Length: 239
Image 1: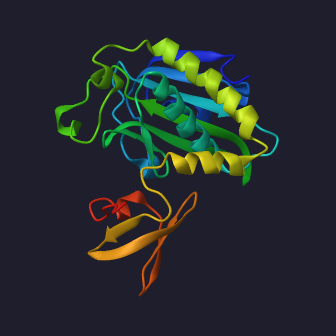
Image 2 (image 1 turned 135 degrees about the vertical axis):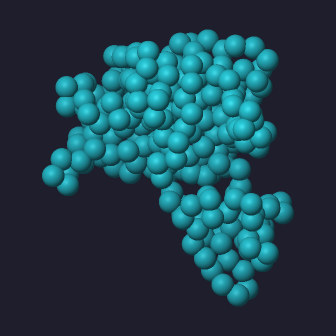
């Protein structure tokens, strides 16, 4: 059961990095929580400020067959959106791994695989959620905390407990039907297949959204977009 064992650290560099170093001696489903991270990170090594008050944790999985990491990223983001709805907060998933509320980032997910001699042996799901932490002034235009949304503190341990319970439930539900999870995940994205967008001053349609790329097209060309950073600042949904 995921979360049967939870280790809490006052301060470490990164919960993902801790699990990479200690996965051999830890059981499947172990969860590492940091009160504060000194070197939190997101995709492509981007820095994630992880001060006290947030929820910073990673889950260790050792399945017999490690299938797509994208499944677990989608599962974690789907779980978060569903939990936030219980707080009457209606979040969306910014493809492929961030949770946004009112156009600002609330949470991020980083799923990584551990290899031994080119063989995948463990999977780590790192999750960072701005719960009660103070958002630095320079980031307030792009990031937000749940405390700021609700105007009150959120019990961190209660939020984690609820997440792990729901994550376990959805994992059992979707692990043999990942296509069903993908359908639900797509419904929660900030943009959808069929949306009209403007990319580098040209009009395109989002033709297909995959785990690791988006296909956009118009009368002249078809393009694959591999990173949301390629779209930021240049895309405006017309739907």
